[in-house]
Amino acid sequence: MGDQKESLRKITHTLAVKNEEISNFICTLKQSLENLEANSNRVQDDLQSEFGSLHAALDEMKENMLTRIKQERASRTYELQNQLSACSKALESSEELLELANQTLVTMAPAFRLSLKAKASDNMSHLMVDFSQEREMLQGLKFLPVPATPEIQVSECQVCDNTVTIVWTLPEPDNKIEHYILEHRRTNHEGPPRIREDYPWMVVEGIQETEHTLTGLRFDTRFMTFRVRACNKAVAGEFSEPVTLETHAFTFKLDSSSAHQNLKVDDLSVEWDSSGGKVQEIRKEKNRTNSPLHSPASRSALMSPKRGPTARPGRDRFTAESYTVLADTMIDAGQQYWEVKLDKESKAFAVGIALRSLGRFDQLGKSSASWCIHLNNWLQQSLTAKHNNKARTLDCPIPNTIGVYVNYDEGVVSFYNAKTKQLMHTFRTKFQQPVIPAFMVWNGSFSVVTGLQVPSAVQSGQRKNSGTSSSNASLT
Image (tube, rainbow, N blue to C red; front, side, top):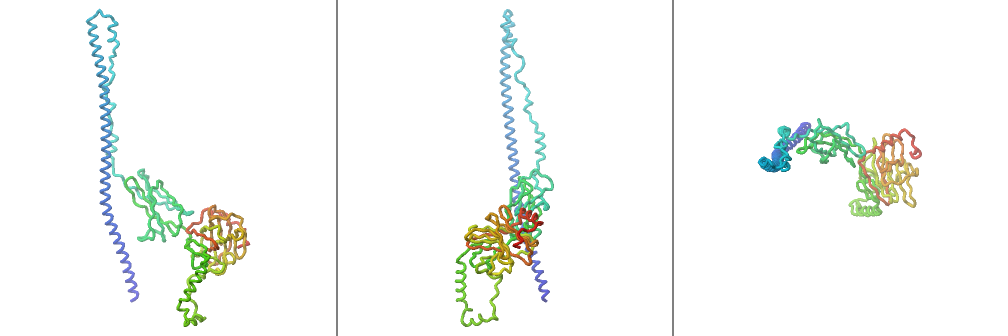
């Protein structure tokens, strides 16, 4: 009976999902019909406008040419009429001379000097036009085609240094393309988009080339999905098939339940709070006094060794002089990288990694369960690498931001100047259990940047140093 109910439940769930898909598709079809009506009216109006503009341009050209012909005719008519008048007067003068044969040759000179060649031609063929090419062009006028669908070239796409470069091609060249539109969104799964996604599409418009690079990213999901479409003057084409790329980035938050009570912890930032311990003790005492478990009737139960306290999730909070907080995500494989922006005026600060078993009284670097670099501003400033209660002074400038690189499989922990990518120190060991990002601050503050890929400069430096022996053997 139970199996039948489970089968019925699965069938019901499947039908419900299918009904939702059909309902969504019906809504899509209705919206498509509305869009078709609106788009048809729009392109019809655009066509009327384009032909109206073409007619107006032809009418304007026609008027200009007619005006040119009229001006040329008037100019030539004026020249020919003047010449005709001059010739008529010359002819009259010649006839008079014929009657007065006794007149001297000097008197007849104007008639002989007169040019008998017309000053203007009656040929107007230079103002004729040949519209045969334009006529063929107009006869070949067609609707502007919808751009072809681009194809993203996955093999040429790159994900590195917290940037993603997307490359695509068209099936064939199209000189009518004006720009491309690229859309991207974060996702938590590999493969094509699902009906419902957690994140919306982000849009990049006006791309002129067939590639685009997204910079300054912080990857808080493992995958990103991309799609692109081409646009000409009139219309946008269909989106390409979505492509999902893996981002390879390490993301975590700070575990406030592990933090020393004098640390005020946000998701990715910490501030020193000197009153934190006192406030915690006051709240604890108030809760203890008001608790029914503190009543006389229950004291014997509290004192009983058989009754243990309720287990609290997570580890014990750091205490005493271990002003420490851990991350909420462990590292048990691969290469990871994160950065820490520190307040250089902090009295003391440390960043590194630790085993989950790090004692609640243990300070970073003072046991075999943690590796760190430590900034000390108390009395005099010093920067040291610490592990297993051994320290080595580091001869390098103190950066504003420190990059931490962990290669779990190779047993490598390296610290970098995050801006210049200059190596500050490397620990080499062999991890026997998962490690976790660890931080310490006293009278100061810091913030953490996660979701970062391992920078290319760091990877290159690690490859160069992988074959060399460690100069930090005394600390490992």
